[in-house]
Image (tube, rainbow, N blue to C red; front, side, top):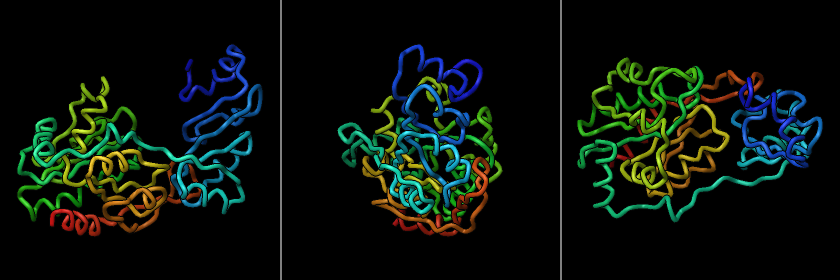
Length: 285
C-alpha cells in the first residue's frame, strides 16, 4: 500500500511486477477503484454481502470481475435475485484449535479475562469501526444494562478496539453512558494491538457463558462460529449471514431497518433490545 487504503493505487503495479495472471481479493469490493479488475489480470472477487438487497455500487463494481465468489448462502441468494451468478465458498474455523473445554477448565479460563469464576459472563468479539458501529454495541450495552439489573452476577466482556481510531465510538465512555462500566471488562488494548494467539482466543470464548453480537449486518461473522466451536451458544441478529451461522443459540428479530452508511441503496438491521434481553434470560436459565 502506498498512499491509499486497500492497495487500490498499487495493485496493478504489483501485478505487473510479479507477472500475475490472477488476483484474488478478499474484502468488500465497494472500497476498490472502479477499474480494479479492468486491466492486466483476471480478478477473482471473494466478497461479502452484509445488506439486503445487494447495494447498487457492489453490482456495478462486480461486473468487472472474472469470477465472483461469496462466502454465505445469504449472499448467494441475494446476488442471484439481482441477476448475478456467483460461486459459494464458506469461511470456516479449525476445530482442532477452537474446541470446548471441560467445565472446570472453562471456569479457570475466566482468569484470562479477569472474571469471577461464579459470574455469568456475556461476551462479544467485534470490530469497532465506523459510526454508527455496525456491530451493535449500543443495543448490546442497553440490553446488558437491563439484564444485569436483574442479575447481580452478570458481567460483560468486550473484545474490541476501545478507542475511536477507526471511526467508532469510545467503548469505555459508551459503557459509562449505559451505566454498565463497573460490570464490564475490556480486552487489554496493548495485547490486542500486538495480536492475540488462537489458543488464548479459544480460552476467551470458553470463558463466556454466552456470546452476543447484535450486528446490523454481517458478510459472514467468524466470531459467531468460533464461539460455537468452543461450545458457547450465540445471540445474533436474524439478518444477513448471521441467520445461517446460528446453530446453537438465539436469533434476534430486527426492531427496525436502517440505510447502510457505506453502501447506499441497501438496508441493514437494528436488533430489538427487548429480544436480546429475553435471549440473555434464556441463556441464564
